[in-house]
Image (cartoon, rainbow, N blue to C red; front, side):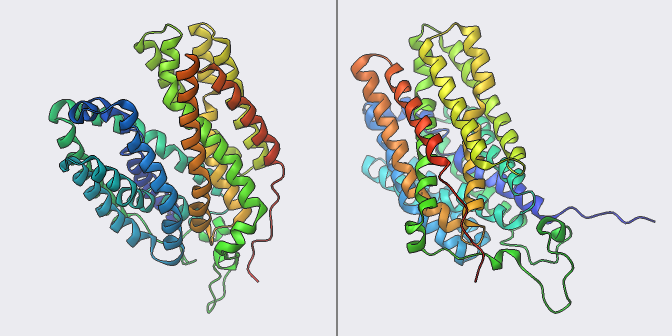
Length: 417
């Protein structure tokens, strides 16, 4: 009688990480703009001043990311996630209750960014990398879907809550929901790292048979990267610049694409259709990149993703018909979804898993300013010229520069000595 083979525990960890990352990003970045009208009206502020909230959040992420990364590499990721879950929910609840804009900005910049890192992509990717080696690219590709899925679910939920309860009580409800999800998921699904005796572990890490008195932890043989070593590493700076440029471009285009489509004379419904098709394509892109990451030179994948980005912006500059736009975003929207799994797998390839949280945290310091700069740049260009086209042209040049720089990446020895 054959025995039933137990599934590898890493897939449980991945599912929990997926849920947490989706909620953390879905309940922050994706829903921020949905509060623009009610909050601006309530406080009597301009849209530009409302956007200071996102700038504060991004600056806070740059500061908190290395702290969270350090904590993940030295303390329990499970406990950090549960603690972060309480802080995340409390932060949203506090924002919903206060009537001071400076205090709101402070909450956005400090406790909420800490909690987003502890519960979101930094924590999720760090834990996932620890549990996967042979299928690491595939696992990270699946995990990368979490942000798109989180946004897809959080936006209609938030709209329903705002329409039913008003923006303050909607934010209160979201805070409670988030805390419950994080705490329960942390308790039931998250484990810090494999012990080596889990079903399927040997097949995942290719460790072979173990002796009775010595369990070999593959991750423990990898190099521990100190802060000084990272900032002296050429790979660290090259990867941060390459990915930072592409993230900055993606963020600027994400914020500007609906008004750009409307500038072309399209109605809001058609613009929303184009964005929805692009989002679906982005999800497909994350799956495709995750599948290929274990099989293809990661630098080639970066080149493909950046090339799709540049091609799509070139199509935007040509201002084509709606059918051409629809086909283009459906085919090339993979560029939006592909950059994240390329980044996470490139980090694992170059720096290993043992210091993954530290590397990711410090790299975020370098990357966040790119997004802030490109957001400001594309807005200034539109204000001065009445069109986004010159900004798209600059972004094409930046994407091509990133393609050239990525070929300078070469793996260093990250095994322990």
